[in-house]
Image (cartoon, rainbow, N blue to C red; front, top):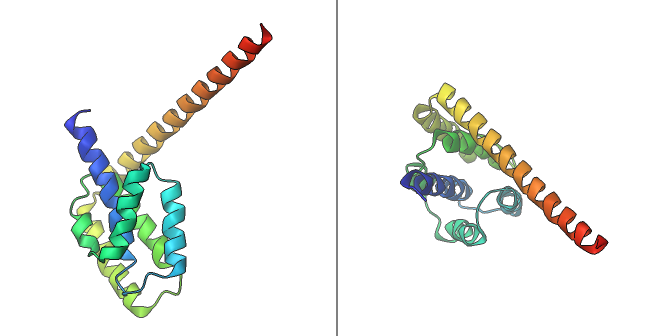
Length: 152
C-alpha cells in the first residue's frame, strides 16, 4: 500500500468522524441522528474496526473541526458537505444547528475547489462502480464454478 492510499483511507475515516462530531454541536445526539449515522455507516466503505472508531467520537464529544482539518481529499470534503445537510435535517432543525451549519458549510466551501471536487467525486463513483462490478463478476464466477462442479 503506498502513502497516497494510506492518506486517502485516513481522509475517508476523518470524513465519517467529522460527521459524527457534527451531531454533537447542539449537545444532543438524538435517536434520529444516530439512526441516520448508522444508515450512512452501513453504506460506507469502512471496516468494522473503523466503524467502531467512528462511533466512539460521539462518546468523546469532539469538535468536527478536529477531523475536518485532517480530510485531505476534496471529494471527501464535498461528501461531508452533502451528508451534513442530510444529517442536520434528520431531526428537528433548531436555530443553533442552522447557524452552525451555515458557518460550517462556509468553512467547507472555502476549502473546496468546486470543479476539482466534482471531478474527484465522479472518479470515486466510477472506481466504486468498477469495484462493485468486479465483485459481482467474481461472485458469478464462483457460482458458475460450483454449478460446474456439481454437474460432474
